Image (cartoon, rainbow, N blue to C red; front, side):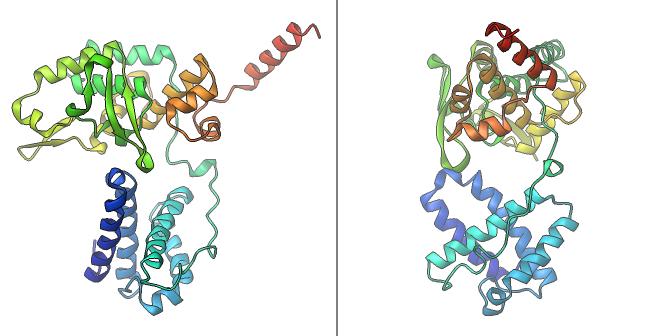
Length: 318
């Protein structure tokens, strides 16, 4: 990926500035922003004559540059939701530049509409697993330790116990572990939120087994999920975790199971056992709207009809 060193250095100033005040989001929000911005800066280098991010010409023509960039993203296989995320990363940079008086004002605020996101733009299929499917995966992994090690069994339980995102699960550390109270303390989540991650007895048992089997070098990393790359131990990547979860999904005939479906499953189960407010709090959402729209399994038309029938019957209307 070819990027102008001038642009790279400027963007690093932006990152350092945000790390200073939002250290907890360095490996979440700003890691995503950095990847998106690198893609844009590579586009500026290869397709736009190596333009500087803050040059007068770039700022003057930013709308048409971004329109060409959107087309470039689409041709690269990005859907509207992904492209919106990339534009947000660029906008965040220019907002910072304006605050630092590097430019007079944000060059495209309110001048570019967000792309409409439809069902076709969903990144991947989402699944709400049943209790039977969950227990089936747990059992089949337990009886097949050669294909599914302790780490795989543990991450399965942690995702479903906690409903936390992959970014949080993959960053869990031994130093955060409070076994007496069955939780990891101070876990960083999206947008700098910090919460405690609670788990249950099966997870606790697997944690104790895993820690007991870890060698000295694995323990030195402090991460729960550790792997060996080129002879060195380090934090397991999110890609590796996704790969493991997809392998688990195949046990129940789901070829494209991702960690976010496990998060959705856990939140939906809390909603079914309690209510949406409790599910929203469990999910760490700021309101129930997001929970209702994206994390609760919609009832089928038959289920809705049966529910209405029962309500009318209980009210003595039929």
